Amino acid sequence: MTGERKTKKVKTIKINVDKCNGCRACEVICSAFHAAPKYSSNNPARSRIRVIRDPLADIYVPIYAGDHAVAECAGRDKYTIDGKEYDECSFCRASCPSRSEFKEPDSGLPLKCDMCEGEEEPLCVKWCMVDALTYEEREEEVEEGADREELEIGLEALAAKYGVKTLQNTLARLSKKA
Ligand code: SF4
Ligand code: SF4
Image (cartoon, rainbow, N blue to C red):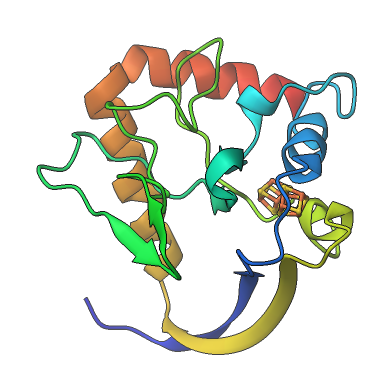
């Protein structure tokens, strides 16, 4: 597909795993920001960032919820960095059938980081007192319609997994909260 080019703002959160101390403040503020009504509760299970923790091995890995995967992948990755061995799936951002991360606890629908839409700076970055998370913005050229394609692919995946009816009901419920 070809089309006009336009400028898009690209938002990036850089993660410095060495600075993270596993305090989970990022999980708390993310879940509170996304509660309905906003800030009415906090439940890290609803957070779009999850900290993979292994205190005995001094391993703390903040991971952002990315795209939904319909099926789990066939292979697994193991990383060893500076002598620390990270579990399979530790760095994966997908909401996938083989694990519980990044699923809305009530509906089971996938969660995805939205960069705290409407806020000047992501709240998890603001709440990280040790600067393990830092925020950057830049401009990038993209083809007109690229956003719509991405949205359609996401909706198709959700419809295939949960059924069109469930998807419609969830969208109707979310639109009432918005
Ligand atoms: S707030 Fe910062 S230090 Fe605390 S768990 Fe999250 S990323 Fe790690
Ligand atoms: S940027 Fe916002 S939505 Fe994304 S993980 Fe951080 S607090 Fe949650």
